[in-house]
Length: 110
Image (cartoon, rainbow, N blue to C red; front, side):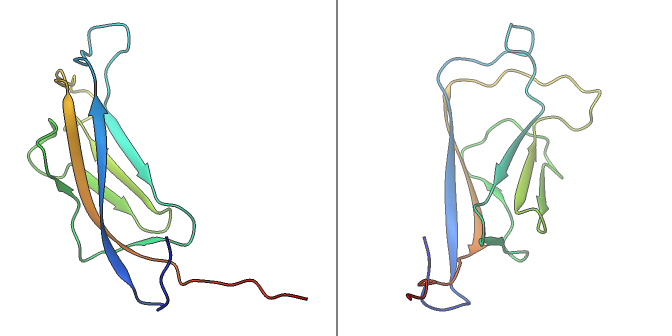
């Protein structure tokens, strides 16, 4: 993805698919957080909050943490490191966030 203008922005929706119930007491273990990393040259938009569109079980507040310098979004599944996460039922869970697209760059020719 790229844009012809240096200030082009887009709303991104990412889907996290769960085929069978994820239970912290089973072999896979507890999932405490998801991390989403943007490709090189993309940047996160500070004024566009991360949205949990389909109700993936997360704490009620302070569940998303954007790290702008690293182009990373961390989505917490628990309130604190000592909390044990619940089960995640099967389904498709969408997250939405804003990005600035990289400007289209055409390499020079010799």
